[in-house]
Image (cartoon, rainbow, N blue to C red; front, side, top):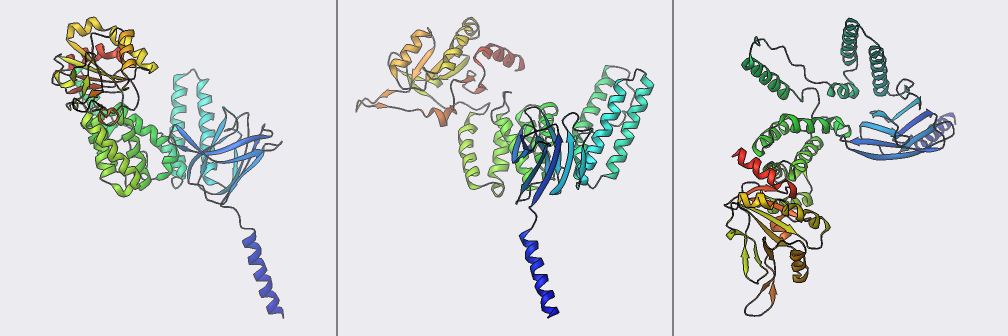
Length: 464
């Protein structure tokens, strides 16, 4: 009987344990100074986005609990408790608690049950203490002593916490240390050699302090910032250079989620970049890493990328623009390829578009320059309404331009026909769209602001 009873108790204890199974995550917080307000838990997605994962209600004592049945993806999170105030947390373990106040979140933070966050806030508290002390110092020697103390603390802290993700996060904020230049610097040539050495070393070792194969960095601001700074400041903004450096970076990244993230960031940067001549980098990335690595993506993404490439590849800088056949105001055929000018500004617009109406006078204002440089404006209406088109020409007094509309009368049937797919042939997803062509009708500029055409052509001629 005792045996049966013990088995029964054991069974009941198991059932009780299952019934009371803890949620996959439970984070208890207390922020003194809060009262009856909503508090949000979100993870970073790069440096410019946050993804809300949970919401809780703080009671009159500022106490709240985030709780859920599905484990949170690991990374750097923020707890937002007003429109301007938040605190950072590292989600590494799923059950912990913290307490602080609204007066000084960092200084008054206490953490239980999370080694990551305890180490994180210990580091921040010490750094704040040292930097506050240094701000009041007037003696240079004293400041230097404090700097060395900070560096020694950081080194010791990193060593002590090297197994934690927080150590990786802090390390990712450090710049690579450039070894001293060994050659003497006596003149401008030596200075140039020094700069080249420093730049080359810095670029080569730029990503040394961040683990490019740890997907937790996607849920932090640091990876996006590193990528953006690298391509903005250290990479020559030409398609070949961008493509080469992108290939070198991606060769280091094997982890699937990080690889997808970095590919996406680079591709999205250069699909419609504000620097002319970088669109070829987008084509390279799309062909090599989307079309060339289809297992990384779902079939819809690959299909849409193929469709996007079909539109944009014929329109990259240096390509001869596709033919455009329109009808001019006198009813005659107007072909883009026959425009005789040294330069052609292709202005694709909607007569009812307010932005088009703002940009048209900006083109007109450069008439004297256009005449001097033998620039012709080929203006194409995407709206096939002759009355609207002719009204636009008259209203803005652009009769001297090559004006055309995609309406063609079939000589046999007398039916109006349309020849041009503006969206898919000329990448017109919003109006106006501007292309700048050379005498051979090769694209030398695209999506240039209307009032910058003169500056662009001057720059182009200096660069030739």
